[in-house]
Image (cartoon, rainbow, N blue to C red; front, side, top):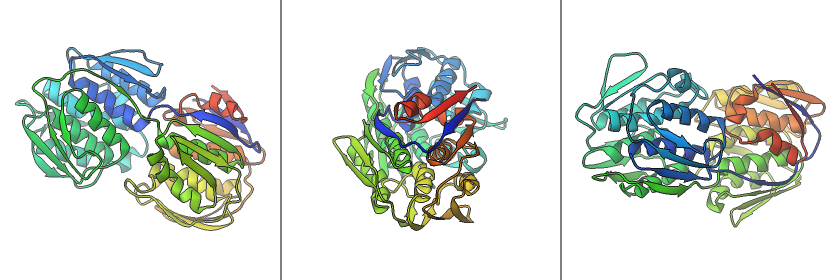
Length: 418
């Protein structure tokens, strides 16, 4: 278990190029299992979550070349197992995305409880509901066991929540189902749109991506394709806010301007001097003021994945800000550690926190309990007086490539200890 030692009080400054969208990479890799033809993905983020999914895919028959680089070649001539490694499944919530391809190619799927952030609070009921609508039958075995002995059949159904991975699971299954499928109350996030574009590349007929109703009809035979992932707008926002928390300046390249607008909206409300154009986010030193209220929402609302960093940013703003994350509760609990850094926090309930600032933070030992709050705690430590230690670092490296090297390139005084 690695630690990151941080000497705070240094302003970050420089330029960062983001890698491909983490939340697109996982469903696109899973989609490669639908076809026996070669698929090539480029601009793939070099992160731990991608590495775990690749090992899961290899365990069920996939051949993946280029691991550790930004370009992957994936082939799966034959599915060899319906049981992905349960230990690896327990490390990655995205392992649920294997259900559709396994049912399509093997006729059955047996996966353990998916892990990742807040596994006990994030069910896959919506995913299973969608699969049942297309003919998957639950089997009384540990974990999640499904059979589709006669294959999947297209259906028309309404998802009980606009879950991103629930929508992606439905899309992956619908792509292989006989006939036409209509998915209503679908998620609209950019990574769902990317999955639809990739599926179209291997021969699937899709209409309505980016709306709440998506229609899907699979091909007689899947082909192969090449696809370049869009830049990760959450990563871009993370670097921009981290620099702002330290009072620094940064230029972040590679994320789409339309996605950056969603991330930047509450930052501008706090008086942050930032601009976004030509797939480029620029942040300059600013005198921050409290935003009053910041609330997360479904796309195109402010992403929950950014709420932890914005909460830390609010500790450096003048006045009170109410941060409301209606989706996840344990994410805000993880930020209670900021109180021991002298931050002015009041946790109203599991979904709302009031932040009073500005406060000069003080370094301490910090527990990275999930990916996004872990990155937020690193940002707090970078702005704090004295030395901090964030552990386990692997939690944050699940979603941020070359984290230590990139921090150093921006002027941070950090050291990794294994």
